[in-house]
Image (cartoon, rainbow, N blue to C red; front, side):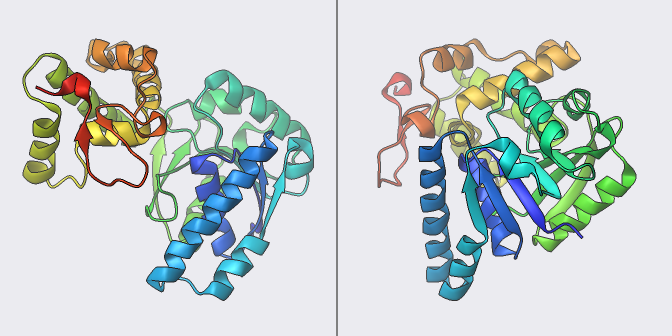
Length: 297
């Protein structure tokens, strides 16, 4: 039974994945080449545990046990050498992911399962750079990882059924709900979500409605907890653009072509929450949604 986990990438998704594994009693090596990023990740994990403690869902003792389960490491070879499962959660960049998987494949034990948290990049393509394609699978967590129940599990062309079954079981051990899908551009989550977000951006671009009107209609009319433009800001407009490009290039269908407004915003560095401005303005400590001056009537 899988117990030793290595997580590569200490950003938002990586620290969330490390958090849930550690909370559920797994030993976790959290790996990132940037030592400062690792320090920041542990601080974030601790802060997120504090929220759980305040809500009564986790005890202080459980928090301390979980934090003790996490070891931070800056070297991939060292971090994966005893792993039974490696979960890659690096930036959504195909060349970077392929490079990382070549390294993992070289240094991880022979029977170790290699998983990617990618939200759109082909698992089959990732697996092809390794000598163990049958042990490569997608394990797409949702943000924020400690809160969201879904894990989208993606079978590559060569993924062994026993590996799929093991990851389904593992997801359940984490208290998650696994859904198994096949390896096509965008999988299921983003093949459906991103065209909706893109259409919302097109609606703004074409002057059909304003930012607040678009989001309010989808929240109140369709019972979405967050409007598509706010959600795009939360995901990161650069990430949305990257996924849409994967869909467009993969299917060759113009319905996936990114809206020019999205392209311009990413080019201008207005990426949403992470940069403080996207369709809305984000101020530290403020929960009020304020539409960007660019889109005010």
